[in-house]
Length: 392
Ligand SMILES: [Zn+2]
Image 1 (cartoon, rainbow, N blue to C red):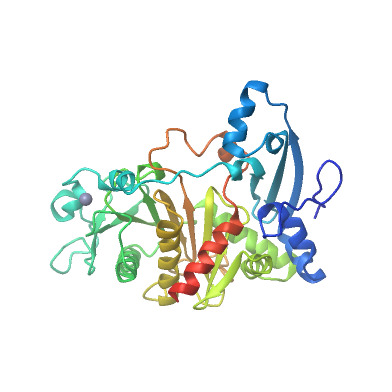
Image 2 (cartoon, rainbow, N blue to C red):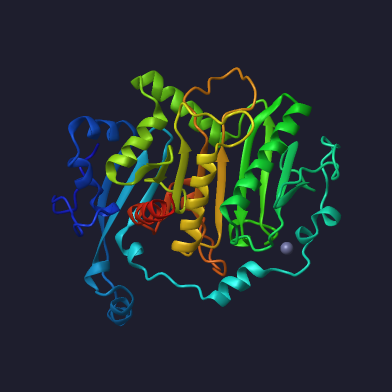
């Protein structure tokens, strides 16, 4: 690990509260073997960007950020996951940008949508699947609070939806989320029964158009693909396998333990919760089963579903997130040629910003280089930990 220093060569501490900008101090305070574990996965580097702001901007800078000196020397930290080759850049100035607070009216506008959208009447205005014809709703799985539909325009051969009875995508209970995930799993089992070659399963949730939803009405999407898993997931599997061969350790165990060492991860209900050190966008949380607790035949586990609910509740009701993406990676439904040993069920949850934002949060940096992140993972971890200890 490269020792992060500022241009004067001194290790930088912003304040005593753990934060991403004193990550180096936190790492160096760990026992040697834990520092070594950190260094097996992560590379940390930092620098100071300097700028001479114009006189006429100084008043505005003081008003927005509290002082001109804050922009004159900007501390930037770059965290790289050397195993998966994902990374994030954090700039101290960006983290100081005052957050907006959405009013209840703005949230209602974002989540209201058109009354009578097709997902409000799924049985008449959405498509059914071909592969499940039993029961009262042929081609659909009915849950207590939701029903499946077949995606009209397929992302892949098997592409379905879980459409929630509740229109507002930000309004759901633990029982409702659990039902959505059970129905999503049942759909995958039925698709897999019809086509045993289709065994690589992915659940995604794009919440609000800002996060790429085409319909505001709450819905999950399920994909079951064949031959090889989607490349981001296959890349993680391969990285974990290479890590095991190189170091003789389980990658996902080490990943979690590093986050826990730093104060960014904890276990609740036997499920591992992390605020990612290399968030793909703002505020990425990872919720994983422990490595030896694979998805059991029949469903996502109860602790996993409960923990995912608490994480979503933290995002929506504690951190004010409205537009988000969720993906759930899971090991394949059937036997495969490649090894999935040590690969848990993993939920990735990320904030996509304000629903009315005009500027995209994904630019050339995010597509082709590294994520540029404004929110501090330590604050995300604190919010998650507070809500988990309250809820469970
Ligand atoms: Zn609706």
